[in-house]
Image 1: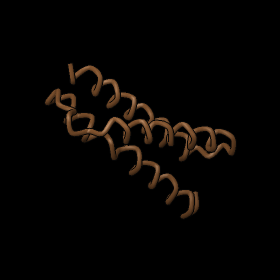
Image 2 (image 1 turned 60 degrees about the horizontal axis):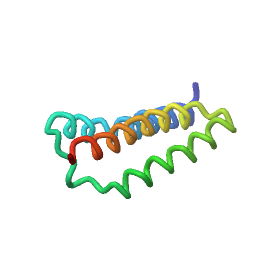
Image 3 (image 1 turned 135 degrees about the horizontal axis):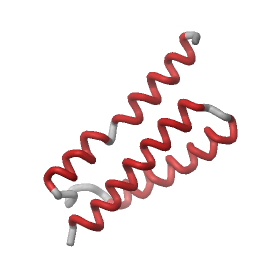
Image 4 (image 1 turned 90 degrees about the horizontal axis):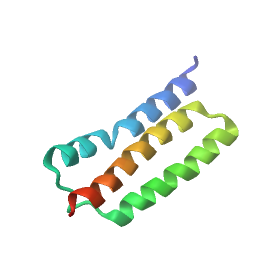
Length: 85
């Protein structure tokens, strides 16, 4: 594995974990009032586009990172509809 692949995998890892603290805090506090639903839908849509791109070019760091981010953004969207009741 060369340094470019290491950089790609490292970037994918860091991008993937960015939402974990927010998802954990939302789950723990059952509070998502300050989260923007529009922002969450934009993130969800962008990860779908990145997934299509990554799958088409077989770019595994892009595929894995965006699959994880997509799952976490769907989780936050679910929390937004569930916890605001």
